[in-house]
Image (cartoon, rainbow, N blue to C red; front, side):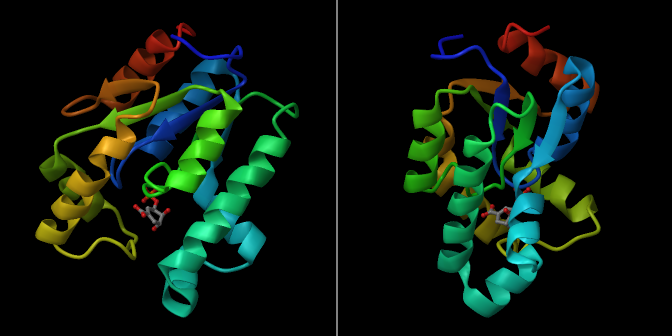
Length: 176
Ligand code: S3P
């Protein structure tokens, strides 16, 4: 692993359905670190649901709120070691990605075949504003893919159990 600082903060990157939240929770239990979902921070800061922000203010406003949440989180870094699940579009947004990369903490891209990502999302009870049909979902995934590849590390999650993925992430981070 090649990062400028010893990781007190790890960012999980990837598309909708990549398992950023469930793997992040498993990884944080394993490391004894806190877990944070960036979408939760956005909702708290904005006092609105993600869906409401998209519906009332649109994606551009959401991306600004997302970036401000990243900025706030990075300013709190000393507080406690943390595993952070980013929303699926955060690392695909060049300004937010450069904030994250500039902070020097490891970023791990959780990947899976797009059909599996779609299936996982379909099994979840909540809706996502940017998930419509499989064609749209796959097109967005492919458009974002080159951005995700800029993460420092990549872990393939297809067909794997959450705990197995968390172990692999800990290992690639030299935290296993
Ligand atoms: C988004 C993914 C969501 C959430 C928002 C936008 C995206 O997070 O941030 O709906 O642009 O892909 P998850 O990846 O956790 O679903």
